[in-house]
Amino acid sequence: MTTKPLKPADYLKKILTARVYDVATETALQPAAQLGQRLGNTVLLKREDQQAVRSFKLRGAYNKMAHLTPEQLKKGVICASAGNHAQGVALSASKLGTRAVIVMPTTTPQVKVDAVRGFGGEVVLHGDSYSDAYTHALVLQKKQGLTFVHPFDDPDVIAGQGTIAMEILRQVQTLGNKPLDAVFVAIGGGGLVSGVANYIKAVDPSIKVIGVQMNDSDAMIQSVAAKKRVTLPDVGLFSDGTAVKLVGEETFRVARGLVDEFMTVDTDAVCAAIKDIFVDTRSIVEPAGALAVAAIKQYVATHKTKGQTYAAILCGANMNFDRLRFVAERAEVGEEREALFAVTIPEERGSFKRFCELIGELPGGPRNVTEFNYRISDSAKAHVFVGITTQGKGESKKIATHFTRHKFATLDLTHDELAKEHIRHMVGGISSLAQDERLLRFVFPERPGALMKFLSLMRPGWNISLFHYRNQGADYGRILVGLQVPKADDKAFAKFLQTLDYPHVEETANPVYRMFLQQ
Image 1 (cartoon, rainbow, N blue to C red):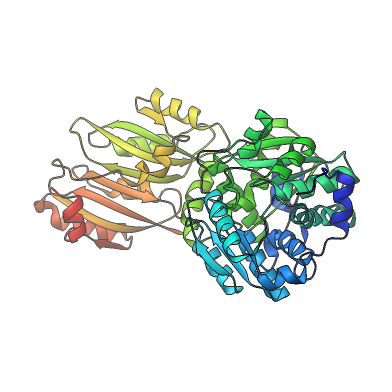
Image 2 (image 1 turned 135 degrees about the vertical axis):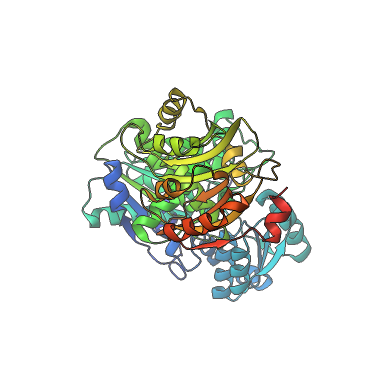
């Protein structure tokens, strides 16, 4: 650390002379046309996800290492990182011909671990968070005489990240847009926002710098509010790239003095933002990379702005493929394009069909059912878990009121974390009431009326004892149905299946069904 605090003018000089372009490229500033049109504002995406290591981190890492002495480079470097900084250090070390030891939390996505090794870094996995890895890295540094390359709390690293703001201001003029009103920046330890804020406040202080954190990893926001650095006991790991318990001394000083505003976003909002970015770019960013876009959407909704120009830094795209299932599941709820409910309906013939008809009579027009989970469990009433498309935010309360008014008691689960994460997958179980049950998997065409066709062709005497459906965004939906069909109706049931003409597989003899669902 320098003894005399650096001012924005000092950082401006460091940024203008930063050595980043030996490894980094000047990434595009790309308009998000569809998102911007929807929001009524211009949204520009700074594509740091297109760097060689799929994040901005190599800028600061290389700038720091390019300033080391030949003696330091000969011994090698060490860093602690959740992944993106690690890749930047590993690639920079390869470029400079030096050894790089990378200490990473054990929670780091495998894609990042593999990438670091691919760049020649020596990976050491330790602890559950960045802070744990950092402590261990300091121990190894002393033992092996290595130079520590901090992921954020270093003026050279900060200056390297600041080159992003330099590019943005130049590119905005080239694009011919209106003057930039605000830049939205994700915050983990604070290196990126410090570099961006220093450059912007030195060159054009009228542009707002807005810092964004996850609501469960907001160490910078809590620190600024407390006027001192606050260590969080735990951090959420969904956005692993910003999961920092304690921000840096220098980054805290800079952010506290220069960042105009701080915001938090939640998991669902970030999932929705990942989808928005994909729609406009056909690229998938990691959660940290979508924080800025989630914040722009939230900012516009709160301040009702129109005709403004906002830049969002897509700071990383090192996403584990396996996480896409979760992101897709939560994106619709995050955008509030889907509402979730627990509905109680009478356990009697035709009540299921009446409820489906009621969905088609919702104010504003019929909606698609996105999910339906039900298992017979009570002789008098049935509890169903249902998802329904919405036409705008805040609509779930109106839909719940509509169902209740028609004698279907309804609980709005749209903002219930337990329901969204777990309960939706756990509706079911063994039921003593499911006599003469036949279990079938159907493939339904995803179009209005497909479910009603199924229900209309059914005999009134055949009771639905189990129903599971989840829209997967394809042309065809896959549905699991339990029907109580007496043995005497076997021929009639076969005719029903033939008339229905939906592809199906009978699973009544499936051992998994017999173990978990059949009495």
